[in-house]
Image (cartoon, one colour):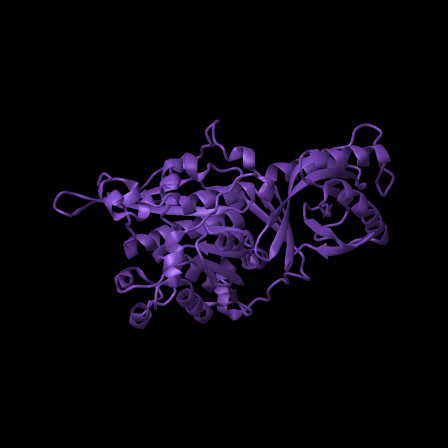
Length: 474
């Protein structure tokens, strides 16, 4: 059941649309676009991927802009040829989230049957305010010649920065509370309202994931979705923020323990935590991740990173990733500890190009080799596939770096949203200059940007480790 709708686009497409739609003379303008669906557990998103700008003579500007039949025919068949749906976009000379005039409603109601008949997908209507704020809606077919409007809860623009316009009716602006007054004082109520309404997924319930989730709850975030299939064990206690001795003894699910603790820590009035007992490589965990606006990658396996990398580009959901590497000498003494944090998504280098995982490692995990002790023992001692370092003190710093990456992307202090890939060396206590690189020309993910469910790539599958954990007794 679809409970929510949203819309997303890259910052490059947002800039191109604004250049066409926001006229110097202040009049309204219009264009068509192609969109692809991104369907999560309970949210469907329209990913706007290609503008179909009018040719000369295809539209008129006379207060309310209008288009001719030739333009509509060209646009709807172009959308169908790409396997996408049709979006109709127009501008309003007012700021903020835009309502619809009776003329706007009639125009989109007339377009909806034609768009559905040719593409098989609902018409998406979008309005751009003169301050760059977007609003959007789906026109769903409910019967012969009947189409019903469903407003999107938000429209997100993804690039160096994450800019989101919210429909206040569906995602109300949170009221200022004494509990996060000091937090708000750092970046103001407007940025806090933007930040608080984002839905954050935390993938991985280990030490880094726990700390990230705790930080989000205390910052006034309204909704957090922890996704993990593992259970707490006694050997996890020295790396756990939330689990107590009883949780370890009872082998309670990590997501349930995290959810219990976040409900106690949260400062938002109507805080919601939705624990998902699944791996992100499984269909259920994958679709739960697609319901989110931002994802934190707190995993150490290549397949999960591959799935998250795919989501960042194909589904336009930014992923904040991090990792820890620890080296000891022959005497077992610490000689190096490095951790890093970075963002994957349009405008950023992907996790594969950064070197956070390899496609060979993904295939080895899918084939079950990474759960074969004899195979792991045969790997070189320094292989990343046999490492599992997450000393709590190092996890604290890694989680902090990831939170700060997210804050830069959303708050953009002094207009700086992209702080680059960051790498810290505990020995000897140095932070490298930030890295600003683009993906290699051979990167497979750049061709998937915004394709959503039309990407034609199957990244999920059976996670036997997760299945075994769910079947194991508490």
